[in-house]
Image (cartoon, rainbow, N blue to C red):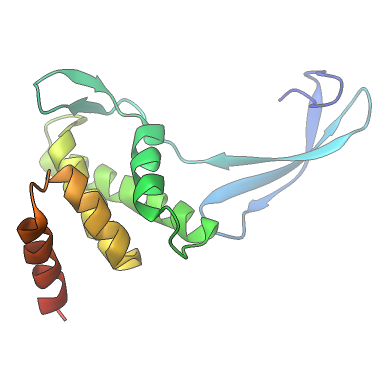
Length: 156
């Protein structure tokens, strides 16, 4: 890990512990050249997952794309950053479980990812869920919004 001050690559780990959210490892480091101390965070990453898109094309899973869609749905909603991090990690955990149970290698469709995202988003913020669902399901008119809202409120 490079020092952010002098860019020296010789740094040593002083301390490692689970981050406050329980989803990352926090490492306290010190540069051997300038003695600057800094922290790094390491998170679990989904690797080697192939996504089959609606048009049949394939691409590597990109966490950033999923986060971008979530941030758009959660825009101007009162959901704190830690809750969003947990949401993203829960979605990725569910993707891993889905892939493991499917036993077809590390392939998942974008529709399956969308369903997993909606299931998790519904638990965090129902307005954001409706926003995400409206784009994901390509709602054509107000009636489709109304039908989805009725489904959402009926389950209570």
